[in-house]
Length: 326
Image (tube, rainbow, N blue to C red; front, side, top):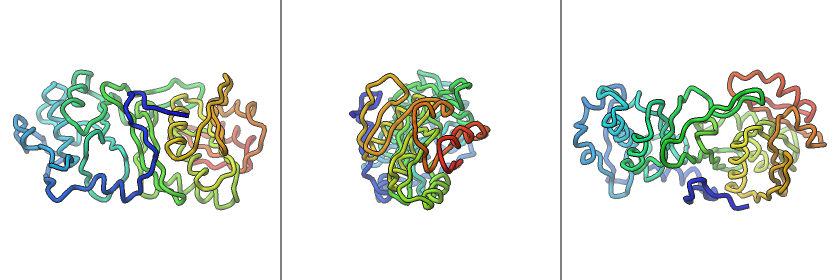
């Protein structure tokens, strides 16, 4: 099943990188500039904004320090009247690296390695940022404090607005079973900042140790991270399910990107796609029992922060022997 990025570019690639590769991707060369920019002090008090392009030119390797890139973004926002001249880096916008991984050093960014989220930017400003700041591949408008997606079938979905460029990102997830690359259209899938030891993966690992080649139902799969981890861990079968269609789209992308061949179901029911060891559904978890006729060893429930999980757990209990709330 061939999956292409919505923007038409070659944004989706098979995951073959190691953690060492990612760290090298963001490492500076010997000639890269090191700039000390105080994040809480107005940018205009630290540098001459009229000469920022000369001051913050790229190194011959094509990379720039993250703070330099964000200063360039802030300069555009000030020029466009989105931000006041006294603005600092801390109140400019949210940088979302791609690929995202928590390095122990401040990254130096190459071209098209950043999506930014702002609650104030407009379309003209966003288009200027994408045009002038080569590291930025896309600009979103939205509030980072508001979770993107849909909580349950009774809720209205919340999304960010793509103002310019492409918002497809990849987060690198380290698991005991290998490195995963999890793609997501960031305007539709909730932001999760990767950690060296992801807590959700640690919880899942403990559950998997109690079974040999289990069958797994990922009840609220999102972009597919936990279900794909189970496949990598040797699960006999994994069923992915989510009521949010963009989550299913990204799950299919991530299955392919992480080495699992996907076949479209070609039907109009809740079964979207399948593979040798998995099936992908899109329905309310309370209705899933009408679609599958097996009892799973493990049912994973991973809901939005603050959401009452009682109904999810009750529904999952009818489908599985062990419910793992993450």
